[in-house]
Length: 112
Length: 116
Image 1 (tube, rainbow over the protein chains, first blue to last red):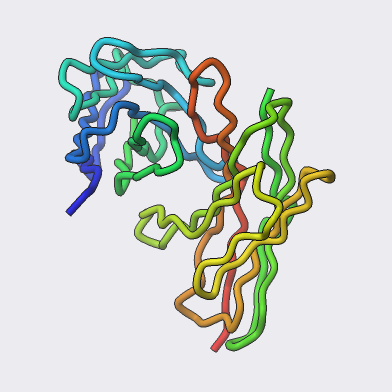
Image 2 (image 1 turned 30 degrees about the horizontal axis):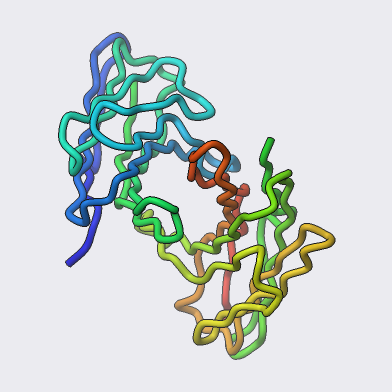
C-alpha cells in the first residue's frame, strides 16, 4: 500500500521546547515536502527536498529546519518552538515531475 | 509568483444536485497543472482530479469534472449528483515547475456541505 506516514499524529509542546516531526514514504519518491495548514490560509510550503541532503526553503521557512538522510524519510525540526507555530503539519511526496502527489494524514501541533 | 484564489469560503447543495466550485490562479509558466483535493474531516487530503495546461479538453474522473478556462486563468470543479459524503473542504492547487521546483500552491479552500 503506497503511502506517506507521519508521526506523531498529535503533539503538545511548551514554548521553547524542541519539536521533531517525522515523515516516511514507501514509494521511493524523490521529492518530499513539508506544509503547514492554518485556518483560512490553505497549505503553505515550508521546505522541499529533492533527494537526500538536497533541501530548499519553501515560502515560509523561518523557524524551521529539515533533515533528509534517507530517500524515504524526511524530518521537520522546530528549534525552540513558538506559540505561532501551532498548526497542522502535512508531509507529502511526489515522483520527479510532480504529477502524482501523496499526502500524509497530518500532525496537529499545539505549542503552549 | 504563483497564486491561487478560491473566493467561495463555503458552499452548500442538496443531495443529488450538481455543485460547482470556483478557482482562479496566477502563473507566468507555460506548462502547469491544476489539482483538486478534498480534505476529509480527519484531515486526510484526497486527490480528485487534475488538469494539465497543455490539454484543451476538460478532464473528467467519475463524478468529478473540471471547466478549464485557460485564457481567464480560471478552473471550476464540478461534482455531479452530490452526496452527503462529498461534504468537506475542497482545495484547488497549482503546480508550475520553476527551476525544477514542483511545489503545490494552494488556495484557501471551500467548505462544502451537502444536505441530505
